Length: 325
Image 1: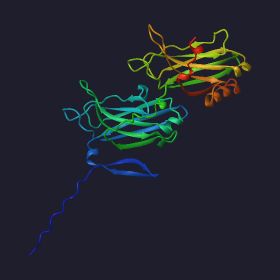
Image 2 (image 1 turned 120 degrees about the horizontal axis):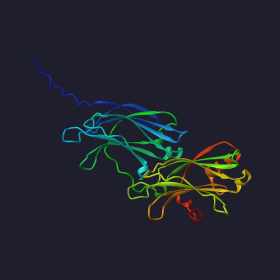
Image 3 (image 1 turned 180 degrees about the horizontal axis):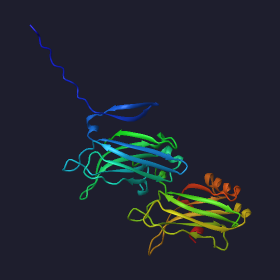
Image 4 (image 1 turned 90 degrees about the horizontal axis):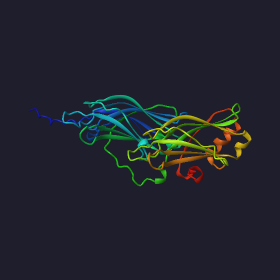
């Protein structure tokens, strides 16, 4: 007599996705989806830190198997970037929205300018996939967070990740980490013009001063001491932006030997119609400066006819009575 064997129930098989994870220096090339992760989808993207140009490039390639968010069983997905810590709109970028798809291909590169080596050590990039809704609030689908210290300068790193549920943002982060922004400045002493050429290239991640979450920034420069008070220059106003491009240059006629006794104040302002302009922040270069700002000044003095650029943090301490006069 044959005795029938009980049938073995096969375990549920979940799809696999190639991911990159690093723990204790060991790379893991495959991970298994848990069911609750599988319902959110996957995201393919790459990151590149361009050290020479102080830029972080994030290329959003595609997503697969996103969670349906609309009544038609599809979604209208877009990707949003957020540099943490930081609440400014300048820290947030987003892709275009693709309609009626759970497998979108963006192939779109978003770039943060004004990124420093210090940022790469202490900041984290939050990447969120959301569903756009014209009649209601946009809905969150899933996210991932990448500590920027994982990146090597000038080397593209590719990621294929499982989207996760929304994680809380730490509201207790040290408020001293909140910056007023950065400014890219060039200095050159021109023998031909017998003067100091000050270039205001761009600002990045400026603090928002207006109710719309933006600013209307412009930059003022002032070479001190200045008994005649004739050394002030001002750029054009850039409307509704926290990352303005100026590319303006000012010339101060001065003997090279006199520069060692001078200080250059560079301040950033928000233009307002009908009321006082708001001070955003500033930076001081020259004999009264410290660290990189002092080094930049003396590099300019030592290298005639050579343009030297520096990316400087701006802060409220640069505001003085002399600047405001």
